[in-house]
Every structure is written in C-alpha cells, then in structure tokens.
Length: 77
Image (cartoon, rainbow, N blue to C red; front, side):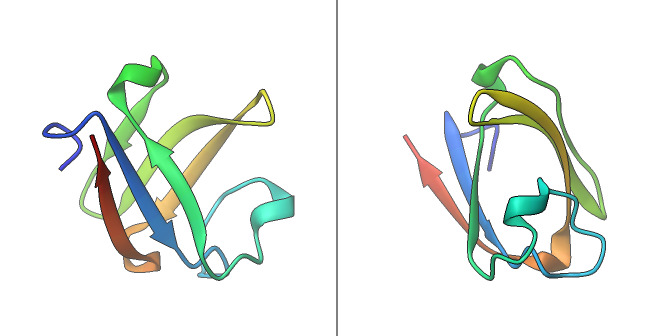
C-alpha cells in the first residue's frame, strides 16, 4: 500500500507487546502514525514489523510496530 500512495496512516494499539514509540505515546489505544517514502527517512516493512524513523515535535525517533498491533491502514493521497 505504501508504494501506491504518497502517505499511509497506520492506526495501532501502542500498548501491544513489542511496540516501540516515544514514551509519551506508549499507552495510546488509537495511535496514528503517518508513513511516507517521501519523508526522506528510513522505512522498512517485513513479515513481522513496520520500522521507521519518524519525527515527533521536530525530534526524530525510531519506531517499531508489530503487524498484529496495526488494526487500520488509511491511504492519504
């Protein structure tokens, strides 16, 4: 899906085991993350995880999201 759209928003349960996000977001039941290859930051998708470097408040953070924690993907553009 990411190859077909400029931005894909994933909605996940950040409380899920093995989710790595900034601490202030770690208890969010409906965390929304925007992914885009146009951001110029690394994104990797494999059989188990979505891993990326994203910015939060202007600060870069590595995030790792197990696929079972994602319950919605919304194409944006």
